[in-house]
Structure formats: C-alpha cells, structure tokens
Image (cartoon, rainbow, N blue to C red; front, side, top):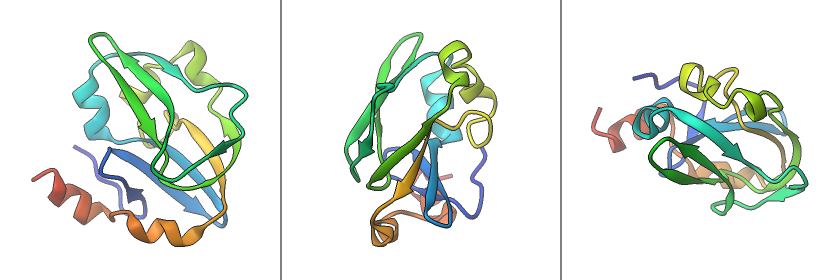
Length: 126
C-alpha cells in the first residue's frame, strides 16, 4: 500500500496534491484496491465548481459504485481526459496518470481539515 508524502488525504479516501493554488485530486491506493477493477469514472464534463466535502462524481468498479468527494472548494480547471477511455489507469497509477480533476483552490484554509500521510495511514490501521 502506497501513502505518498506531500499529499493531503480525506477520510473518504481522496487525495489532493497542492501546487500553488492548483489542486490535483484523485483516489488513494487503498480506495482503488478496495474497489477492485475500475470500469468507469463519471464526472460531469460541464462541472465548473466543487465544494469541500461534497460529491463531484462517481467511480464505478465491477461490483460497486462509490461517490467522489472533493477535498477542497474551487473552480474546476481540468478533468482527466484519459479516464474516459482508460478508467483502469487509476488501478495502476492512482497518484500519477490516474488523477481525476484539477481545481483552482478558492479557500486554502480548508486543506487544514485534511490528513497528512501518517494520519491517513493511522486511520487505516496500516
């Protein structure tokens, strides 16, 4: 199980990598392993904004569908175009090529409500 340093994590198993005022968001290695083979990622192509703690889409695996929750509030800058044809890249590279959306963060203080890798790992009892 991989818990990269330098990311922030939600209790719902999303991660955010912050670079300046841009956050790249995806699901954790733990989440993708629990879901199994990912077959579809559903994020509205017209999505303009996300809100901290609220669902911005779903991720579908062979046996289940799970909501995606935003770790920040902000303007959506980009949705990973590769996920439309290759959603399984999340299984192989959840912290790299398998990112889901990029957001311009509007309230950086919200990030203080998230966990670092050690706290997230402890939450999972890893």
